[in-house]
Amino acid sequence: MLTAATALTGATVVASAPAHAAGEWCNNWVCIETYDTGTYLGRVELNVWSSSLGGTVTGRVWTTNGWSANTKRETVGKFTTYRGYVYPQRHFPAGTRLCGEGWLDGRSVGLPCVTITA
Image 1: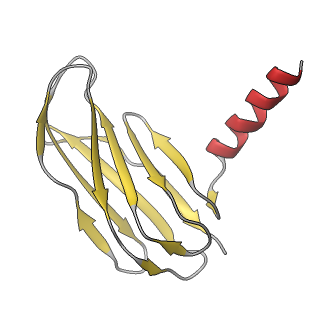
Image 2: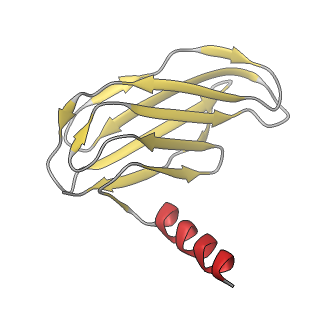
């Protein structure tokens, strides 16, 4: 019973929209992960799952207040998770949306977003 409650609580935290602590947010084959707390983002990880396709992966991470960065371009095999990193190293106003989009062979495969909170 306790294990089920713990798993449910963990799922709720991952699915919640505000990012006031380190966490991971996903949409389709793409996840963004933060490692910092509050409104400061030092590093953001963008993960793209290649499924049974493989191919060239690219990514872009941005905020609604104008900051953006591209991740490295990499060719990956089937059933591989690409990991790209960007380093904003700054504070963002509370309420700013952080988004990351991943592409596999030129087509978008996911676009997770999260709201940064204090």
